[in-house]
Length: 146
Ligand SMILES: [Zn+2]
Image (cartoon, rainbow, N blue to C red; front, side, top):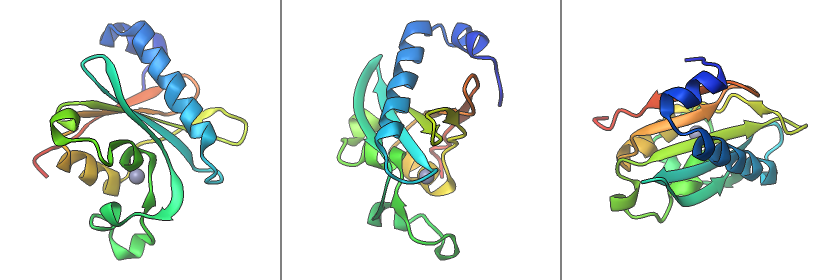
């Protein structure tokens, strides 16, 4: 799903909040040390930021449950870092914003992987909004029935 940023913001009716949260997710991504795959995530509910995370290369047992072996070692993805330890009553029906940056700080695609989708679904998270590039974002509805 691709949309121009301005159109997207108008549809969401969240121009300031949306831009600010994405900037924050991008800043978090910049703090990651994971090579070309630097991601940041912000969990939002009721217009308030609930928690933050960025990815790292450490083994993540929570993610491993949902990751097929052939996909390799489950590491801490930003989405998982952002929701670990957050109670279900907060994660339920929340929205997660995920941004990725390249080496020079430009946004790149950060669509949640299948492992993260499963973890997000298990936590009742309703939607993921992710960066596509510098001016486009995607929306993913999380199927919580999984
Ligand atoms: Zn992931």
